[in-house]
Amino acid sequence: MITVSPSLLSCDFLNIEEELKRFEKFDNLWLHLDIMDGHFVPNLTFGHPFVKKMSQNTSTKLDAHLMVSNPEFYVETFKDIALHNFTFHLEATENPLALIKEAKKYFPSVGISIKPGTPIENLSDEVLYSIDLLLVMSVEPGFGGQSFIEETYGRLNQISSKKEALGLNFEIQIDGGVSDSNSQKLLSHGATNLVAGSYIFKAGPAEYQKRVESLRG
Image (cartoon, rainbow, N blue to C red; front, top):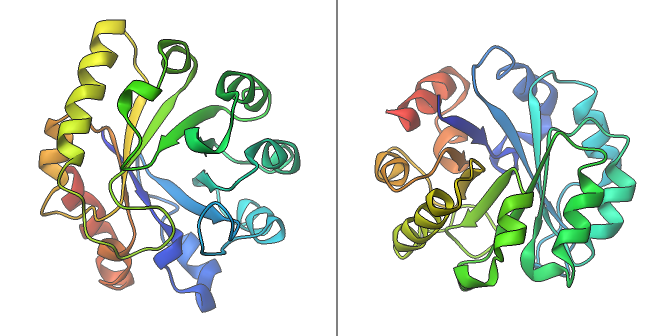
């Protein structure tokens, strides 16, 4: 089944504990944490104490997307927090293979992310063999609520073809502007994990499950 990853950047922060509980019984669902440092991207979001507290108040898998300039630092500081997936940006490190190897010591799943303008060719075969997840940004990282970049479909085709040629099974996650209007097309182009923030949370708690299932088709 396709994994859906609601982005908590769009949730009701004044009632975060209740928001976490609302997703406890959903199947194949991760909670997506956009962690920004104000340097790699201009926005600033979840800090270490907040992430740790969330991990202690949910049994749902936590999916950390590190939009930070020094992801090596976060591997060390997050290693004792129960994160399921740790994704960092290819553009933020000079030695992605070493960072993947280190992160795998602490996290069940390790991913790498690329911005919309980063060529697919910048992902070496060695990196693709090493990761559990590839996050393809379909908006510029930094803020929620942006419009989906249509060129993402072509990038997905490139990635899916390379994945098949190499015989790999990493997840392909899409983040940015995902809704029921484009989810089926994304899945048909190879996506296996859909991040959605505004689309899910703007509907209100009574509609969360319906919105999540609508993304799967």
